[in-house]
Image (cartoon, rainbow, N blue to C red; front, side, top):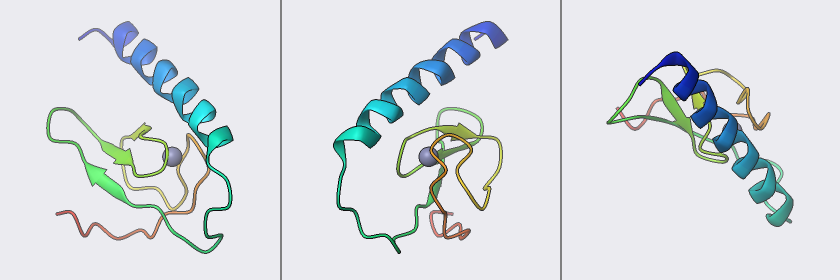
Length: 74
Ligand SMILES: [Zn+2]
């Protein structure tokens, strides 16, 4: 997969996440997202928007969701 393809995939994911974000409403404000280590690729996937990040950020760089910072999936 080329870098350009990766960027395209990420852009698509972000767009999908934005649409999904508009649909979800009334989620618990104190709920925290989680990072899931991807099995078939690099980085971690946001539990909220499925955006991919190279590391487990405190806040998702894609949707801004606050993450619990834990890596309970490992
Ligand atoms: Zn996210």
